[in-house]
Length: 364
Image 1 (cartoon, rainbow, N blue to C red):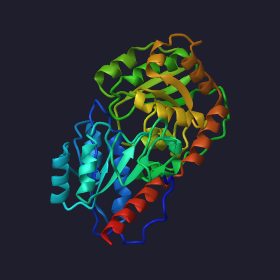
Image 2: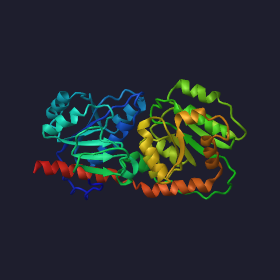
Image 3: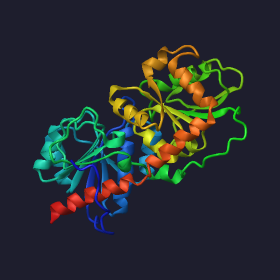
Image 4: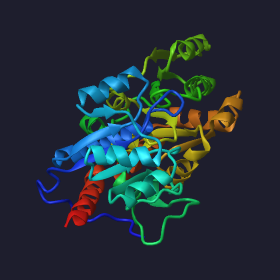
């Protein structure tokens, strides 16, 4: 099993390639699958490939607008093996990248049987998908609790984190000299593009329960969570600002002292920027990411969303960890420094180079 990638493809070698990215976004599943496909598409297009997103992007509106602004063509995504092959043949696709936790594994098998290169973006488990290339997005590339086909090409770990151009454009966060350690920390709280499990109000309540001074920006995925957040009582020197989901979160995150978020793919973006991050698991599928980044001492762990929801007092574990982060700038600085060292932002180039090499090898 190969855990590293080869060198980049020669300039112009990807010209003429046509690649489909199969991913969906919705309030139920969030936007993470589409966002990392978008990251990969940016690098593939730089190499001259025509790239198409095959899927359904119902919400949020800003994500649809962002895809439009990027010029990424969005077409309906097939769900059955026969339809998948039919679409791939009709569009003359050289490869299909699958990023879905629900797509039947027969789809990947059918594509490979039709002679089409298949890459699967996975999170610690192959989910029975048959692929020529697996990009394991579980940090550290551990593949916790998973098995991959014998001899499969697999790229894993922080070196292959799929980071969007918008994140890289935000730049690395410059470590600031702390003049007044008692000054309120600036905190950003968001739980993905749609926050399907209602994590932001829970995390905001825990942050306020610390009693520590803070300036908090909370991203509310709708009017109801916004109302809940605005109704929460604040303590002395605690200020809360509620905003709608926006596309410029990387720039916003770079200006903050601490980010509280779910243990999804956006954690890798934040590490790349150099943010101090506290993470919460909202689904079982996020546990490998949580365990890896916590085990590598790159984030502070707050446990599961249900555990944080049950926390009520300053002595509860999650609240106590947050208070420590809010009041200890040196601890935040250490997390930020280690995260930026782990994720260098060149993962898309490594993955795209390997995928293009597989396609061109098939052509020869």
